[in-house]
Each structure stands twice: as structure tokens, then as C-alpha cells.
Figure (tube, rainbow, N blue to C red):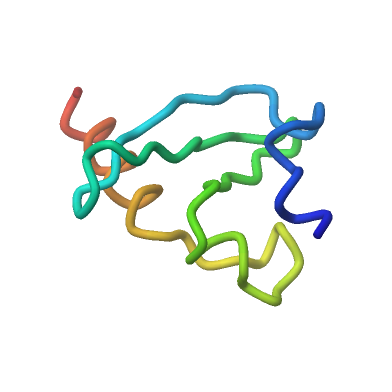
Length: 72
């Protein structure tokens, strides 16, 4: 259950919210830790069994990174 509360603790130094593409009324929080680890509050990212620094990015993190590369 610790994973579910990550975004409620001081682990993340930067946070933004993005809406779900499949459920526009659902929002997920993207965050970055002081160590540079990126995370998302979506089930796909939260329920990975890997340590935080080794988790694969979810589609929300990938799309956000792509939008930053495009200047968005």
C-alpha cells in the first residue's frame, strides 16, 4: 500500500495533473522525485513490481515527455 500514498508524501518535488484519454473525468498525477525518478498515479505505473527507479514509464509519462520535446 505504500505505493498508493507516494503522491501524498514528500517524495515528489514536482507534480502536474493530466487527464485520462479513456475517461476524461479521471485525472492522474505525474511527478518527479529529487533523484530525477519520474512517476504517475495511474494503475499501470503504481502496480509495477519493480523498485521506483527501475519502473517502465506509463503512457502518460511518455506522452508528457513527447509534448515537452515538441515545445508543448
